[in-house]
Length: 169
Image (tube, rainbow, N blue to C red):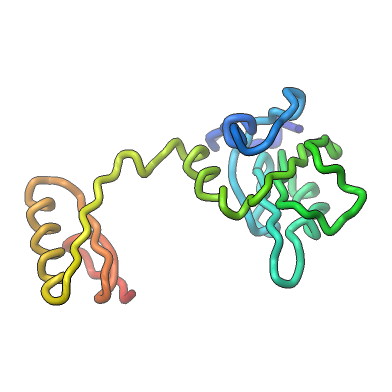
């Protein structure tokens, strides 16, 4: 892995931290990861590319593209469309290639670990019922806003920060 290609302004997280409990990883393949990508056209040097099974093809079909773009690692969802690909973590050129069972179900966890658990700092209030949900949500948002607590809204009328124009849902 060519660490000098990674933009020093981007955060890095060790691959072993991202994959803890999901897949075994030899220490020699524990590269710093500076981003996450599912679209091969958006891979930057140091990124982890997540190759999922799709309806038409597998993300592994873009293996060479992400390697050429400088991806540090590629995690893929078995089974592989390539019978010669071993079912264990390997090094391919300068890139770690790691199978992760049910990868699609773990994307949220990977993002949560990479971005250092951003949801932990959020509080959520839900409003349910037949009538008056939007009004109640606005009253709650206004009360929070008046106490200098930033507040977002999401509902049938749209979403956005309280006090700003809401985008149509």
